[in-house]
Image (cartoon, rainbow, N blue to C red; front, side):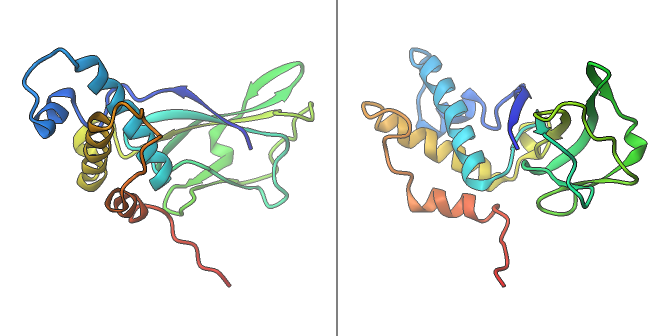
Length: 188
């Protein structure tokens, strides 16, 4: 199930001013570095928590509908599914959303076909499902612990910037914050 981002977050959950205050920086010489670290830290925390913080849109590609008619959506939390398309007649055709129900409460969220969804006329990536995900479009919509994890990780990378993002171990306290937001699976 390939997924592609089609609309990135319009803001970050931690502003430049918040990060500078956290780091006790009162000059503008390194603003570009701090902005980059915030973006990379947000993306890292989203991967660790398996949750999108700020509203963003992804497109899920399927080869065929599952026999059950239920598609598990790989990103969370899901706000909406604004479009479902299937390849037919030589192009992607938008399906009526009344034929689907979004179960956004489940984790992972599910898109349920209420009838028989048409199978695509091409064998690869013939179905597209657009999903809007994230806690909301404002920083205040993001849980405070996740925002704090972004600040902590960006600060760690700032202090160890000779090594670069990703080359410094993520501290256990940041991993623990992210783990609190991951879906726990029961193993039978």
